[in-house]
Length: 134
Image (tube, rainbow, N blue to C red; front, side):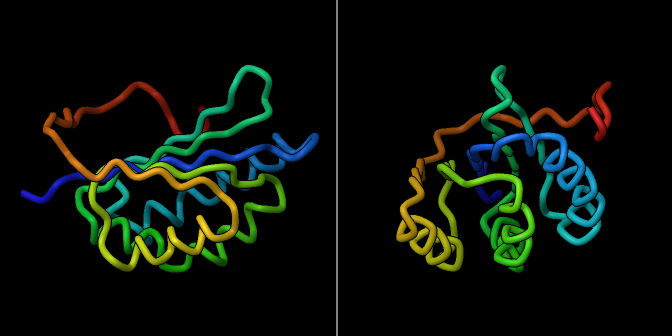
């Protein structure tokens, strides 16, 4: 079994753009679910002040993270109308493709943190009571 990866992006919400971002994000979920089947989990959370949104993604392996990152430049440009990236965290060991992309991200001044050593754990797969629209 290959090690799972978690990809977390932290973003500042531009002034008065939360609802616009929320609509954009919810509209993008269906295509991500269809076109990126290796993305096992994608969840977004907003802080109390509605100033920051954090998006958490879970992948079964490094190849699924690579697949998610393909085309990310264009998807990011659309999202960056509403948000501004402030940081990325990766838990697990990405492939060279993802590392190259993260070097570009870090070169643009966005903090990138890597936690490559997976110690173990489990993923319990079950139905949740929540829905996509939250």
